[in-house]
Length: 226
Image 1 (cartoon, rainbow, N blue to C red):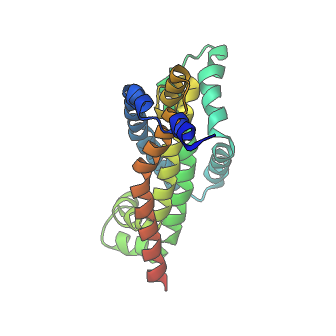
Image 2 (image 1 turned 45 degrees about the vertical axis):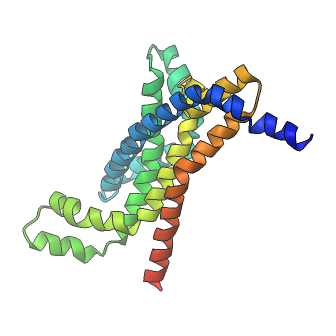
Image 3 (image 1 turned 45 degrees about the horizontal axis):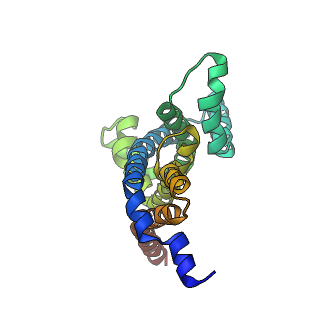
């Protein structure tokens, strides 16, 4: 294959101009999905992390089983089950609903473990000091412990968020027109790989600044520990 043939097959500007409206629609859907599933995962993670502070076995054991289940279960399998499996039980779930529930369960479990580690990294004396000022346990957790916990595990939270944004591409299996789905549609119409390459470049440009921020935070933490 000559260089001209290679460029024509993977980096055709004419094909890119033709496919751009479809890719733009996919990019908007990817951004909307990210704005939906990242907060859902964080909310689920906070709930699980707070529950992990309860030492009663009737809470601890079911919580551990819940977290292990949804961390071990592939998100693609979970999404297909919610969208295509539940209707056999008479429960119809829309594509957006399946994505929202699936990501809430899966990413919430990961965020929960990260936040749990952050809470455990805060010295126990912080809770006692906060309670001595008249704060309730809930207020102390919300205003004293959680902010410190988030700061301690911020690189891990950002790293997990990066993975969540990349995982939105699996929404294509339930026919949600996110970026990868639209790129594949454009490829099938144009018979050219340029739309797929364009989607890869868009993902890179979208996530690279966050990757650089993550690297800076990790380096800052290493310097602080040193």
